[in-house]
Length: 157
Image 1 (tube, rainbow, N blue to C red):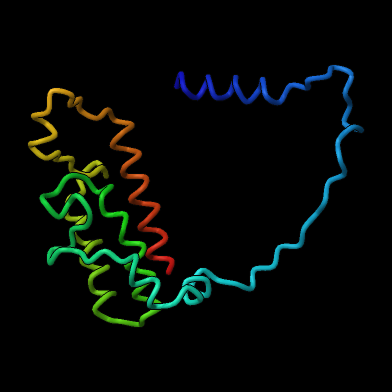
Image 2 (image 1 turned 30 degrees about the horizontal axis):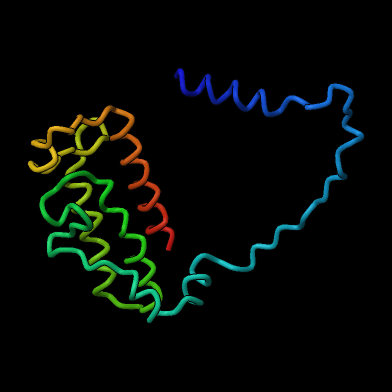
């Protein structure tokens, strides 16, 4: 909460006028834009092409793990690379890529706890490091937020 208050104070200070005699008449006129949404997300990834997208795809393990979760489950945050997999599945129209995506999602939700959070299981080499400090609630929540954002993009495509 303290961080939010500091951000609010900072933004308030930035919004103050440098010249107290300045009026709204000094501001440039506002321009309005017509928003045209003729291009969809899928149109954008299709324009990238299958060959380029395939270079960004991470092959999940057989159980659906991605990133640092491949060596043993760490946190759901490391499943975020599923977005490139979903994009590739759409562009290539490959059922196997779609199945890999479904496995990554299942892998993630198999580790969801009753309160909606996800398991956290750092590797031994991290925990045994003298510089290790356990994550605070906000660290785990931000990791989960990154995962949920990637999940939303994946499901959108």
